[in-house]
Image (cartoon, rainbow, N blue to C red; front, top):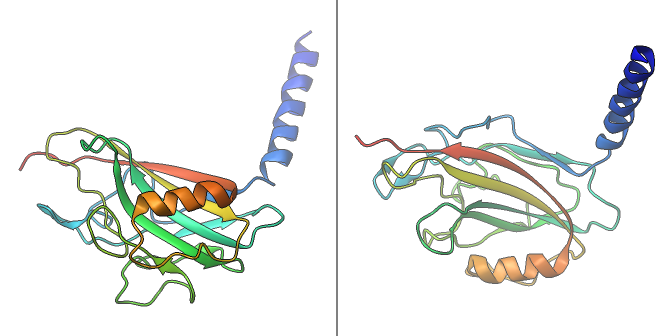
Length: 185
């Protein structure tokens, strides 16, 4: 009995490993379970470095023609969450955004990609900056595999409209979640 349970466990592990290797997956060399002062916004009372994290993805599904990346805080006390980063029209041959790519002045984003406005009212990356004492907020970073080369939007498109176009064109998506809180100073 013990031998058959062990064999079953090994088989389950083996097959889950084999199939998991082919899923659309998002990684970050910069982020762990929590964001740091490196990613924190610089403004709204926050004093971070506002550096977007490195992101990479693999195993995009067949039919992918471009990618998009968003960062969203559903815990923001707004009634509708908070969009921190919205990037779309990322060329299909791209599988990474380097650290700091969200800074529009550095031109580190792949050619053709568009960083539209966030809920901070600016283009590019705007890092975590939850209210002091509000507790942990989750930051959901998602890469979308899209069935279109471009969304036909520009850098002044608000996150809700981009989200609508993403919803209509997504083949697959993968996310990572990081947490951050500010303590009262």
